[in-house]
Length: 459
Image (cartoon, rainbow, N blue to C red; front, side):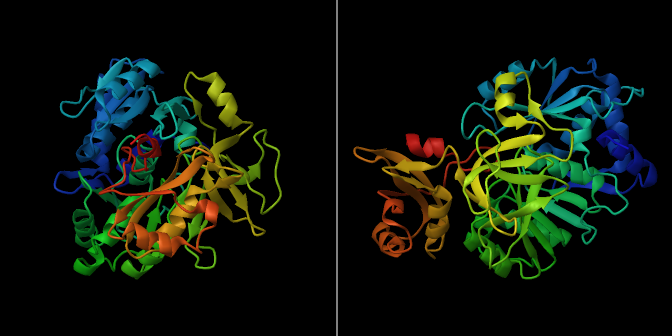
């Protein structure tokens, strides 16, 4: 029988109302009983009809209020539209206009009234989440209650090995929404902090003795560069999960040393494909793989039309969701290009090995067509990361008078350009070697933590 997230919260509040569900370090905590009562009051007070879109503009220090507001909106039968307050005001307004939001909730003074609205149904629309827009205009991805609550409500709760789960994912992202679901369905108390810095996040882990930690690769790189493991006790971590972007194998190896008791795991999905995903426990024999399908989903490598390709042949990555599939809100043309008969085109190129492990070659939009060759930026970045003086790296294409495009690499770190060129020679093919190198203090990123290569190309 299908359940909804409000069903799950109601059950947990009834079973253990005083148990803390979520803590924002330095801000406060929220018990299941408080979460249920306050969100029901928001739902009763909302001047919204079933299906109305409600914008939720919150910052990372507002996770507790956001959790109450989100559940209040969906309990009322309305559609939640999560947006980070770090977005440009013009972008927020454009997204709210695109979805036709009738109400906008922000931190401070959430509405409250007595009453008990009719519960939503699993097939009802629950959420519109806007993509990061790293490859173009952000699109609103619509998900039903059945999609959001897929796999939840089982007898054995996720991450039973942990009393606390620490993360620093921002509001308004698919990874952030995953943590919201964990807060209501998983075993551990979810803990986060208003702003990520390596020292603060390491202190959060140490203070709560977190057994499970989730982050994005950029945060992992910052933790390693700051040597947070040398100044904080991170021995409690048994599972460290990376999501939202590929985890370079060199970084995964170093994480295994820094978090000496942790299993390092890479999760691959997208806002469009969730809850489908692949999961990979880091394996030195398959350092570049993002794993095999989990959670009842499936993966195939296929042509643009969806025709399957054999193992070890590069093609488009497709994922099949085990739940009611998502779609683009009010964009039939884009939906028809991406969502097909339960399968989702991921926008990535990759291949499956003979054992069914998935390897990403590149974002389709990031492949550099240089002369007669197609260059994988992921491969170039993997090799550049192997130099000990490189903290971060991003490869991208730049115009070339004869080749059309050539490889450029932006690096963060102390390595001299000539030293890096010598290091890369022999490790990369001639057409993969960077024609341009630039050193930056930090790579440009969107609010979800992904590198914004469009800004690199335009700089």
